[in-house]
Image (cartoon, rainbow, N blue to C red; front, side):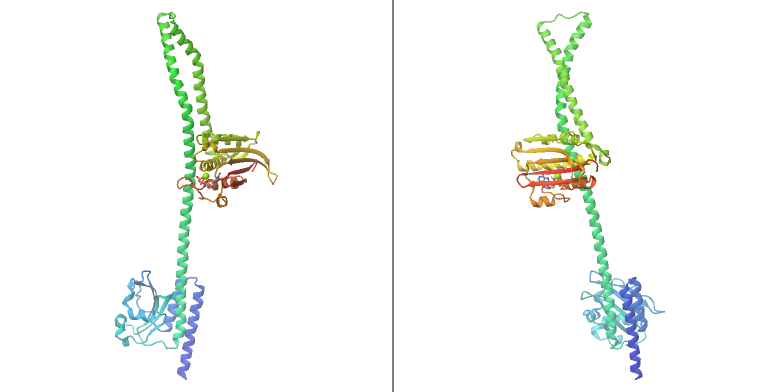
Length: 469
Ligand SMILES: Nc1ncnc2c1ncn2[C@@H]1O[C@H](COP(=O)(O)OP(=O)(O)OP(=O)(O)O)[C@@H](O)[C@H]1O
Ligand SMILES: [Mg+2]
């Protein structure tokens, strides 16, 4: 009876310990503390000399002693027990791999099949041991061990039910820790991807600006080349005329008399005098054109206009943009400009609005080129502006760009403003143009964009900008 009573008390104490451990594990505020505490509780209760946990490494070949509790006077083994080969305990692993607890009541009685384990345990003077498997998704991933150096057979068979609950708690804690680690790693990976996406986006925006600058430079080079050639050829004529006139002047100065002019000399001089005015006016015209191009370029590309919110002249903006991409307009069948003057100045980031116009016009030209690849003369681009009031009674300026290009399918229409969406060849379009337009019009200027497009017919894009946003 005494014995039964004792066993009952023993079992009750064990249940109390295990439920305490369970409570601790559920909170899991400090996992390391909870695990160490559990090892100590069960270790003390079973009068173990050492309680420890081994976790398998990811390679499935080695394992590490990651936690331990040692009774007073027992030396720590943890440091020594790192990178141990899992298969140096073949019998042991086979016993626990299905999730069963291994109760070695007497080490000296281990059979030949457990020779390796017996030798290792005896080397450490272990008399009995209890091993609980740590299972992860049904696969053995480590174990919790309780070694006893003083006594044999500390555990009764009926303790096993309670201990198997403890083993499950241990497993679930390690599962939870590894799930948390996975979440943490996934989060880290996501953060890294997000960072690199942001970086890529910044790079692409920069690239988009570079494309705009490239377009600008190409247009400007093309435009300046023409009048400059003009100025230079006239300058040659002028040099020639000057040489002839210089000859006459030197003759007069040396002899202090007018030369007797032959008929052909008289003819030449008369021609030069008549032509001089034309030469000068041609040179002047060429220089005025160069000056205008340079002015457009300066206005178009002024960086301060990107960040300065100031009065912006829509008409001037459209004209400057057209000057910049004039080389691409030359093949068009028709360019119609319907600027409804007077057009009020709007409050805007001028540089950004120029970017909007450039993106929309270049897109229209691309669509036209795609629709009429062999007959550019059929291409028609129409730019109109008008002033009106929107549905909120705000005074707005409307800029409408109409092309007879390829038009848009429903899919293109739906994805038009998505960053990186492009139907153009790799290297041709970044797909950022319309997303930048959207951001500038909607977010920076509280404006609206209206897209009307029919596949195979053409597209009309209307940008509405409040006069005072
Ligand atoms: N006027 C238009 N007519 C037909 N399709 C258009 C027009 N404007 C834009 N699109 C379509 O919308 C897509 C996205 O335009 P978006 O300007 O954002 O990028 P992109 O022109 O392809 O490249 P980029 O970054 O060089 O501007 C284009 O690839 C094209 O398919
Ligand atoms: Mg574009």
